[in-house]
Length: 436
Image (cartoon, rainbow, N blue to C red; front, side, top):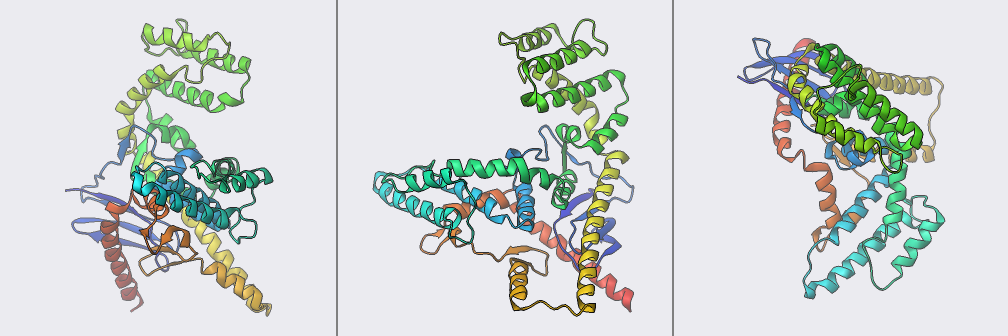
């Protein structure tokens, strides 16, 4: 007997909240027009299969982790598309594919041909994203434009030709778009999808709602001190680059005095070797403590908390209440957007406003950037000619794109589609029966 927790990124018709069945398991299915579906199938005895525990984080908490996470990157792409900044992520992916092609082993006979293809790829990237006359052009600083153009004019093409431009886009992601992404509906959907399957201790420490529930869940005083120590270390490491030498030393000594020293107010069970290592990392020759001063003690505390509490916590009502609230938040946000769009359309009809040809063309163009088929699968309709070479089949850039977006879900795709077909058929039958 097993229960199933599956999160499907499907888009159904009107909203439903009906009891569903799958084999011998039963549960409830909530769906709306655009939000993600969270299906929790529970056994007859009420025991739910535990969510997977990961030693590392499951959620990407910074832009570098996000760009390396296929699931998170897919949501980030949807977010950038909604901001009309899709060309930024397309440029980044294409440049990553271009750089990866230089890591391939080449024979002497094929080296010249490969260099010609690399030059062609570089020119295509330049024409599509850097040339100021291109419709997909990115507003790079003049200095970067000149350097890329000069390198492209050289006889020997190199892998670092777009590095400065890529770093510029990365800085945009880090300073502007990732922060906005974290506050968006897409990030909530991403959290719901990932945390419904896996959870790591770092995820709990990074999500305030989960952390509050976890603090209440940890009942042992010594373990509570371990958890507070982990929170203090996380805050210290996050703010480290913004602190002066004196501020960093003061913060490190505050943590040391409270949890590590022989006179600690909330002492941790740390052996002498670990304590001496921390002391040498805090009291350095430069006068600035190392950012990783508490690394050894963190490992000990994290292992203790993970083994004693995390698996039980993800089975607790507190964790699942968080998922329910997150799903409701996603639904309410989508419903608000849907109502606003309907209200705006109704007002336009009542006021007798109808778009002119130019406005209608722009609307249709934006609307047709992508489509969703009857199974809720998302298909882009924008030009991806750079990723396709008719003579050579799938290009290196297309392979890189698939690596980022599809690798983590290829094995799940077939099962997910079959489950989706079953669910859609059941829901449609129930709706038809209700109408009759």
